[in-house]
Image (cartoon, rainbow, N blue to C red):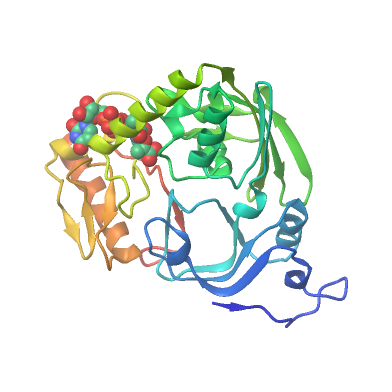
Length: 310
Ligand code: EPU
C-alpha cells in the first residue's frame, strides 16, 4: 500500500484523488480491511472525510464498491479493479437529542450502542456484538434476537452515483428480512442515519446488553475471523445453521477455512485461509445442503471482485 501521487489530470485540472480530503491508498490489500482477513489488492482504497469525497469517488470514472467495516463481505484473492470506498471513522459523528440519534454511517454499531446506553436510550442493545458499521447495517437490515436495524430508522441520507445527496424516510424504503431496497441504482453510499430510540432506565439497558453479549458468546465464534452468518435463513423451515449442522458439515475444512463447530452458519478463517478456500467451502456447503435437504441457500454475505473462473 502506498500513498497516491498525481498521475492523471481531471477535468478541473487535478486528478480526482488529489481532491480527496480523507485518505487514498493505491494497491491496498483488502485482507487488512475485512474481518475474514482475506482479499487481494484494491486498485484504490478511499476513506472519505465526508459526502464531498464520496462525490469525487463516484465522479472518478472508476468502478466503485462501497463498504463499511468489511464484516459482511468476502473479497476475492484477485482483489478489486476499481475503488473500494470505505465509509469509516472519518464519518462517524454522533448527536443525541432527546430520543433522536443522528449518526455518521461509518460509526461502528458497538460504539453506537454504548453511547445510546450512556444516554439512557434503548432499542439497539441487540447490536452490541455486531462488528459492522451503521451504514452497513441499514443497507442489509442487519438484525439479531428478533430485532433489526430498520425497527428504529427514521431516515437515511445517501449520495447517489450521480453525486446527488438524497434523504429517504422510512416509508420511502422497501425492506424485509436482511433486505433493503432504496429506489436508486448502485453504487450509492449511505452517509448519515437518523434513528428514533426509546428512553429506558440505564440499568435495564445494561442488563439487556450483557445478556445479548452472553448469548452470542455461547453459540457464535465471537472474535474469530469470520463474516458472521454466511447464508440467509430460508423463508420457511429450519434455519441455515441448523440445516448445515444436520448435513453433518461442522468441521468441514478447506485450507485454513473451517465450518465452525459452534455455529454451522459461520465459516472461520483459522489462519492462512484464502478467499478461494472460503468460497470453495461455501460452494461445498451449498451443494451438500441442496443434496440432503433440497434447499437452495442464499448468500447473506456479499462477494467483492471475481470468483471461480469468471
Ligand atoms: N442451530 C443448530 N446448529 C447450529 C446453529 C444453530 O442446530 O450450528 C439451531 C439452534 O439450535 C436454534 C436454531 O438453529 O434452534 C437457530 O439458531 P440461532 O439462534 O443461532 O439463530 P440463527 O437463525 O442461526 C440468526 C441470525 C444471526 C443472529 C442470530 C441471533 C441469520 C442468517 N442469522 O441466526 O445473525 O446473530 O439469529 O439472533 O439470520 C448474521 O447476521 O451474521 C448473524 C450471525
